[in-house]
Length: 159
Image 1 (cartoon, one colour):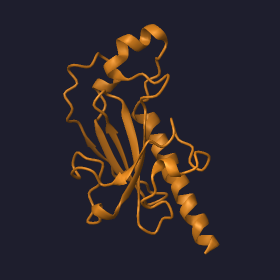
Image 2: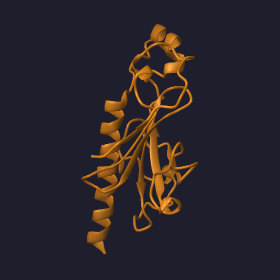
Image 3: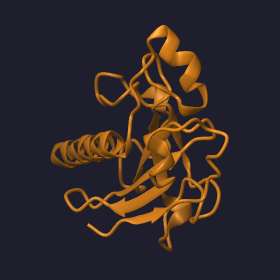
Image 4: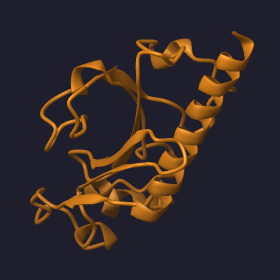
C-alpha cells in the first residue's frame, strides 16, 4: 500500500504527546476496496478519517445524516460528507484527475472520551483520556471503506 504522509501543522502550541511525532495527513488507496482513503489532523490536534466514493455508488452526494447509523458503524458515527474541499495537497481531497467527482464521507475523533490534544490538560483531569492515534484511525478508515464497498456491491447485486 503506497501511502503519502505529510507533516505540516505547527504543533508547538499543543502539549507533548504521541501526536507530536505523527504525520498530519496520510492518503492512500485501500488495496481491498480500491477507494481513496485519507487521515487528516483537525485544528485542535484530533485526527479525522475519510473515504471517497464515485458517482456510481448509491450514497453519492448523500448527506451523512441521511444514512441510517446502523448501515455504517464507525467511530463516533459519520460527521462529514462533501465533494473535494480544498486542494489535493492539504484539503479533504486526493491526487487524481477526478477530484471534483469524488464524494467524501468522514468521521472525527473529538467525541466524548476522546482525548483532543489541544484540550489534553483539561480532559485528563476529568477522565477523557483516550487518544485516537494514526493506527486506530487507519483501522477505522479501512473499516469505513469496506462497509461502503459492501453497500456498493449489495446494490449492484440487486440491480
